[in-house]
Image: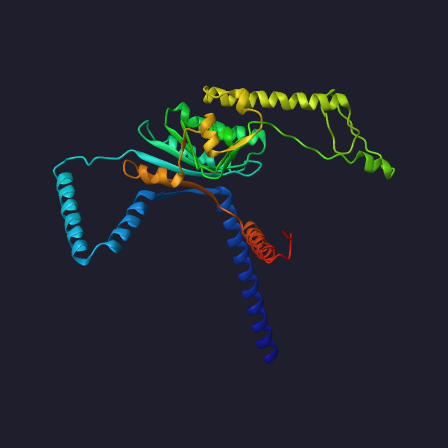
Length: 344
């Protein structure tokens, strides 16, 4: 009997363990399916409310108790008057909206996937009285990636929705390709803008391979299927073709910018150089010297400010990888500050 009791207890534990494992697997699978079905979601923030809260905090900190009481009395009176007007059928005055987006571009402009969703969301509700405000930061990158990002912003222009782009730090090369789409470009005094040029670089290990008696074979169909290569022996003809392709890309870039900012002297600004905000303003690359903070602060008086962000859901592996990367960066930063690495 004792044996049967022990066996029954063991069997019960085993069944419980198997059920627990099965439940965990089912939960993980369900989460994976749900995540696959919904990769991200649109986050909306009422920035006007934020500005009002900040203003109220400052006002309350500066006023005396008597002045605060008087202000609260006036606010209640105004609220009652507004409620009465609504009750009587009067429609409250609605401010035009300003939709605020942030684009912090990487080399491959992978952020364009979120920008696409944000622009589509705005186009579904915005009208010509509204405005889109983009805080842009990018040093450029791949042509096709930033070409698509620029095209996404161009969707707003095609619908005649005013577009303003603010550059607080940098909008160079592909970043400026995006910026020039705007009806208005503002920039901080020391922001970096321009770099209307094209660059390509590739290492070549052919001499190293030859030195070590290593053969490299590359088969192509089409004379210019491959112009320059990392491991083969490059030819002058291949280099000439590669430079020709760079010039074609540069011509497309210049045409794109000049169509959107026709007053620019392209011979002067399309040299691949970059400039600080004040000089960029003199050259016509930007319309006004102002930070994004100043622009939003002024706009809050006439517009309802709405922040939009399409947040892509990250899996557990991505979250762990990002956490590890941030930890490494923090350690590296501390070591650098202590002059243990990269001495100045």
